[in-house]
Image (cartoon, rainbow, N blue to C red; front, side, top):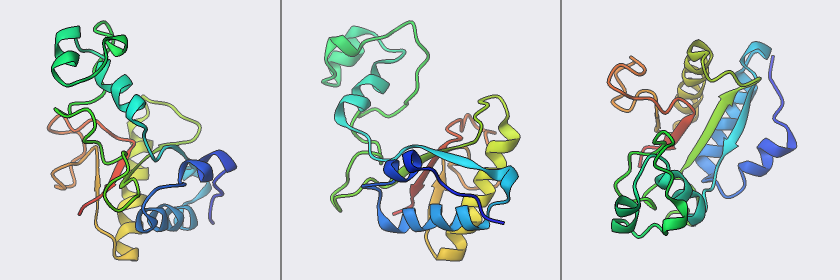
Amino acid sequence: MAIILGQRSLARLEGVQPDLVRVVRRAVVDADPVDDFTVLEGVRTKEQCWVNFGKGRTASECKAKGVPASYVQPKLAKVTWLSNPLASKHVKQSTGYSHAVDLAPYPIDWNDLARFDRLGKLMLAAAKAEGVAIRWGADWDRDGKPREKGETDSPHFELDR
């Protein structure tokens, strides 16, 4: 039995590369009601990249990467490990689309990693069925062992191109 994405989730898929949207829509169709999920983010603006980069970094670290000082938040936990703040696949690529999407089981419980793992398996199966290569942020090395090497981006899925 499928789930239904709400209007907010559908709006957040606008601007995401169509193959990746197809994978998300396939996961929706294949999901059981207990696997309900929401779309957190598709396309990311330059400003949001700066916000993310500023978390957990000093003013000098941000300045070195061209991030305005107003985004510096050294007391917060880091949320990105990219060396280039604008290198995220959430940013529109040369194709004109974002090549990444963040999803979370709904209702969201950031501590329930088992539900994120179920969502990861659901997305990977949907990608395989659709013939689209993706990577999951909780298993960057694709060895089937989430989070074993500091792979902590459980909501993140991106095209592997």
